[in-house]
Figure (cartoon, rainbow, N blue to C red):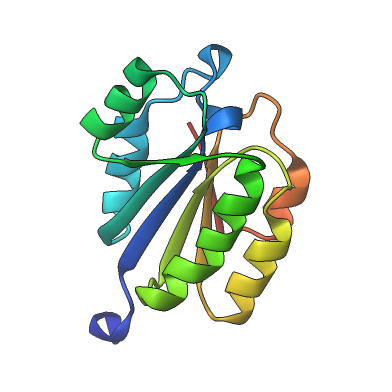
Length: 140
């Protein structure tokens, strides 16, 4: 009824090592189009390891995402950002592009903060445990 009161700020967080594999055929442009239907995308990060090649980094940038290269455990860097940016930027919706349960603890905390969680994934290798935590699940 009062849709204008909803927080439609959207942040996208992509688990690069798990989702940007050749066999996954993930289309970042499609991810962004889906997210834009949910609201105003103000953050779009793709997490990569420190050895990501320049072609991949360029492709990520060309799709309108910010590449975040992490040394060490990429999942830790992404999990920290999953908590930090939704609070800092007052995101109402958090789109997480992953297929495994590494981020469930962060997702639980986000839900406690009242954030809407949308998981975008592929059916291939998807952990069904994520279904229990997502407010919305989108398979590409």
